[in-house]
Length: 287
Image (cartoon, rainbow, N blue to C red; front, side):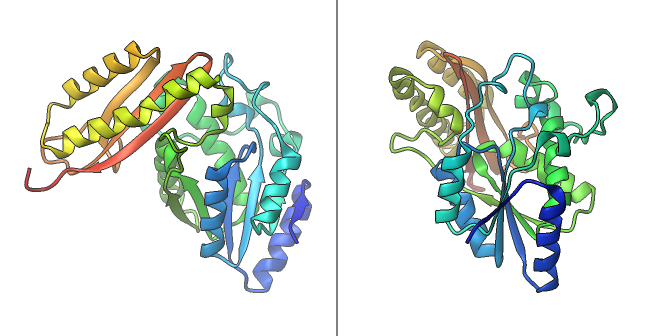
């Protein structure tokens, strides 16, 4: 039976008991409003360890001043039912005052340089500092052997991966593939903001990623031309495009002629909703 805890002391007691019993722990951090994509992360975590922990915490420090922190959907009862049915051992729902006990002006933050300021970091200043800080806090509290993240948030994944390496954290990370709706739209809690008409338009995001990836596979190396083509196409469909970019998959740097592992990333706004997606592509060595 799944246990739900809020106090940090209670969480630490349960983790200590599991560690003493020789259990391993896989952890899935979330902001709630769970969908099938989150449950795929949970299923993956359950295959990696004997105990599975999920956190739900809407982190204020990864939202900008004009973003949707107050309106972000919070569905704790429904989320708890889904997680219990999925076989989760522990749901951790901390109180914000316990996670951030001091004033923001005096708080310690964690920041991964470089990666945190490009792409989404450019359009959402401070976002990845908030992400790195809360993820490190949760890692310290849950003490997992494994942590599972989704590939839709690929830049976040690389930032967490860099942080774990740089700070010598004693855990392993697992990247789970993006789960999609039948039309190709990546599952996201923010999809609920879309009107039916906007949702139909949003499916074209994945089509653009597919077409750009196919251009790369076919040997096209003018990545700037590919990017411009799809920015124009998405703009014509009604998207406000933050970026459509082809990068190196290992570090999101600009690709060179010999780069074989690539990723196409996109971030757009449709109405009031910001959507991100990506598609990794392998450029054949013979090209």
